[in-house]
Image: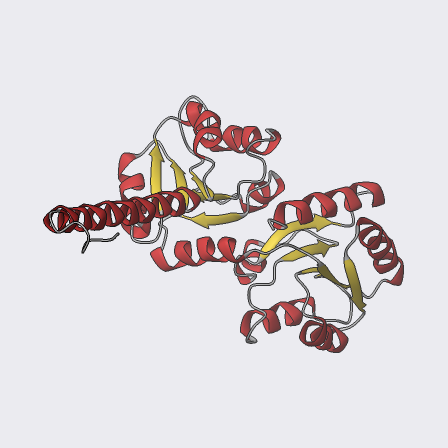
Length: 286
């Protein structure tokens, strides 16, 4: 602006400058608030529990990291999940009218909500049932703050699956799963013993591991222990293949890394492949 040509505009333009700064400041604040709103929406946790004190505890635990939306009515859980599309859902089991198992079944059978991770928080020790119905995590009450925060942060780190490592001493199983995964577009490698498995984890850097936990003469739990303690691999999600039902202690020892537990002794080949593909689809968020 040519202020020198119009001296009378000097004071006016000083006002313009002030106005401009106010407008720019307001715009920046709006952008910041808008970005914060989007970030908050992305990091919302829906807490479903008929006990208001339990929801207050979750808000206290998570409040600095996540926006916690409490819901006392389990009957409105599906509707609320569709509305806010949370990062994750925490779910109590013992609730009147509609218990947590019913809510979990509804969430996992509805296309709009089936991919939302559900963390069960309950005094009921039914982890196997929870995982079989599609729960991502299962934590017994009373809930520890650090444990819950770690579970949620692990969910946020989940990345798109491109590379899959299959660890099993049965060549037929490896070939069956590997061929289907390759046809689906994944990059696949295999390991048939503990030593090769650890080397493949280090060199191949998989996005997901399919591990036969109950292999004879090979420590599937040793592989899990390596994943829990080695740098840079602790967040790799696992799909476990077993020939037996796992005990509560064995499930606890896995430290929440598992995305699914599939019993090879019960499932047909077709069902096994279907379950693996569905689990990978849920893990792959990219």
